[in-house]
Amino acid sequence: MIGVKKKEEIFFDLFCEAFSKIMTAGDAFNDLVKNFVDVEKKVLNLKELETECDVQTHKILKNLNASFITPFDREDIYDIAKEMDNIVDILEEIANRFIVFDVKSVKQEALQMTELITICLRELKILFDNLKYIKKSKIIMDQVIEVNRIENEGDLVYREALTVLFRTEKDPIEIIKWKQLFDLLEDALDACEGVANIIEGVVMKHA
Image (cartoon, rainbow, N blue to C red; front, side, top):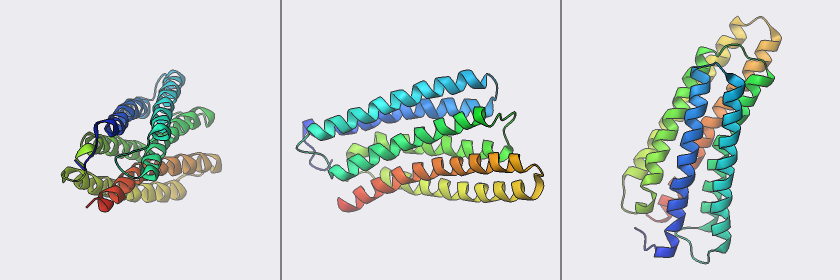
């Protein structure tokens, strides 16, 4: 560990607690996309999970505001908490768009991007489980690299999705709908990478 005192360890516990909630929301989103039935019920559940994640974010920020000593820079703790929250906000927004856009079925590329988001979340979970060993654990940087790799794979799927969409779809309304949905799925992957990149910066500061 990096000389963390007992009262500072709460942030590592809070990050893990918050990310467990994010994993639950991610699994719910994955189920929505892969099993596209009872959509309104699943979207409502995802909204409730997003609210629970907001509560966890506020809990981290409340402790940050009340703490004089932190395990690493306050700005980094703030940025990690906000970017974590951003992941679920985006997933909930995509779910809402499925209803607003009256989506009847999910495109194959959206399934692929959702799978990559799910994998990214699993890799980030391993990262957060090891975050308290930030100076000693090679696992953290391995996870950062893996999340970056997955996001790069997502970029390729995203570009292919847009290529297929604009080449094959004749209905301009469908193009507008799916362009927005693919953009948001890409944003979710970017947010996962954003969390990893912030933590990579923390590792570099403590190397």
